Length: 114
Length: 115
Image (tube, rainbow over all chains, first blue to last red; front, side, top):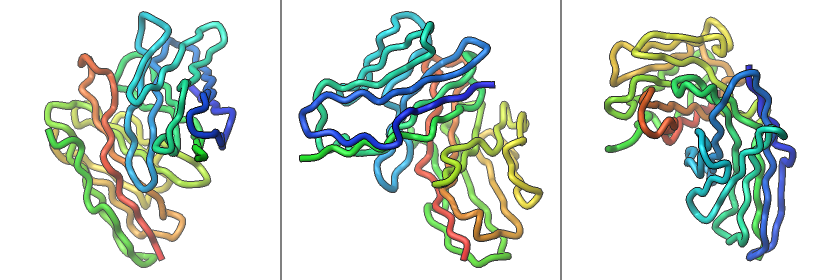
């Protein structure tokens, strides 16, 4: 079975500052990793994913994440945040077969302060 | 493509009533997932189907919950009778297994309130 730990439930950050949202996972098998964003009262939108290959993954809206197998981490970063980045961010893992369920972390609420 | 379609978007009902949530996956996708989001438990899997066959329903909380997928383009999640603790946002997601993207596409969700 897989599990995901998002170490920070809330992260406040000033506009144009960098941000890192932390995610650690546990799994006995190879996995795919994902970051989703949820804006208030909306569904889940995929930011980026790691399936294989390069450990540095770039996604939408200027976000990137790095897969670190030895540390079982998949931290999300952005060099300069905007007010519009205020949202809930979810890290998720699934077995690397594609058609298996996602296991989500509890989420991190990013609040960007003007 | 219209994406994953869920209906209704909002449902308010009274305790004891039957509730039916509907999902239309993306055309051609062969796996479908029902997730529930609550403040206390976050996002959790209820049940999923591969090629219309239920694979794992261990996340269904009680016998009051049931799900069906009669064909590749439609699924329902039914709660009978509903209780206030069922209040949550219910998401449906679909994926083309073995496809190029290997990502689940989510619907907008159904916000259920049981009074």
